[in-house]
Image 1 (spheres, rainbow, N blue to C red):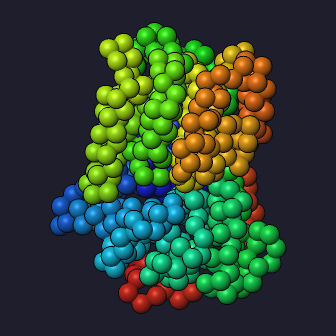
Image 2 (image 1 turned 60 degrees about the vertical axis):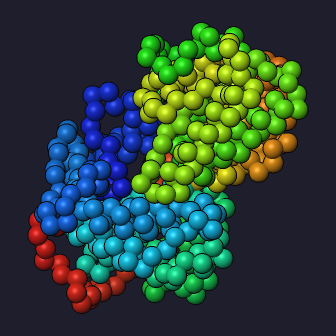
Length: 477
């Protein structure tokens, strides 16, 4: 009987309070639990270059968790370097931020090969393998070179850029060949799907069979949009019942005003500085809005060992301080910020209590904050969602107030409208948005992808094992 093997950069290890985990982690755990399987990934630790990097195996119920450390050199080259200094900005249309180093790409491929070897070791011929995100674009390529003919699917959680952006990255042709070794490539939106098909067609001269199927070297590749969702009923129940007391904001004091919740990593793709500038413009030009609202911002610092992220963190802190200094007073601050990571239950409670949620991404694969906020609302008195038109979620959530994060006037107008929106309009927008969440929830996302992967009939021919890649390797390599 076949099992499911999941590979992702981070692994959600079993936790008795699993609902504190996000929807994606729960959905993957459920799939693995239902089918029986293995979750493989990095354990977030770094070790000395000379120390043997063994995979640690934890068994819990019907699932095995296989995790391993990275060496410091692998962390710098694979994770900080090629993944986050090159691929991440490229895929978020920030080509001016791309820092490509050939040695980083070599390390990236080495790490992908290492995980491919582990997949080869643990997979039976009929197992299906589901690879997640931009850290592992090359894994299927190495699996094929190792002789594996398993059905291998890939889901990209972030945007897939246009060909002209890929062409600015020196190894784009090699990456296209690597992607072509997957059986199913899943993207967040139809736009991402179109970009991926165009990329593979143009770079590899692939024949386009129909809207979703490409033919390449006697095999078929399914390229399809699978918009990721949330679990609305579960979130609604949790938000209604949550009684977390250790929250980062004084909600009793905050509710003297309208409250706006935002939850973001401090990343240039999230439009944080642009949002602060919109607040600045609104309060400068229309001071009557002072004391009428308060932004409650969860801003999680990340990747601070990457210079661009460290600089953004400092700029963000300075912008918050400047806004509060100019427009705040002893009894009111327009922007209240917490830099601590919050558990899932506490987040759902904040979402339910907040009058407005603002997602201001400059570019985003989907953005589940927008969907979780709607799912958490009181059906009798829902809040308002302000959503960047550049987030993938905007394609499904057109009843939100859509804004352009590059246009301060657009954002200021949306904020004013949200603050003044009558209950009847809030209810009407909420009902449409909530129905959309139910129609495309995370269970449907997971099941549709796995169904297509199971049905994919790979026409691959056994390839000779490439020189220099041995199928004989240490159990824990």
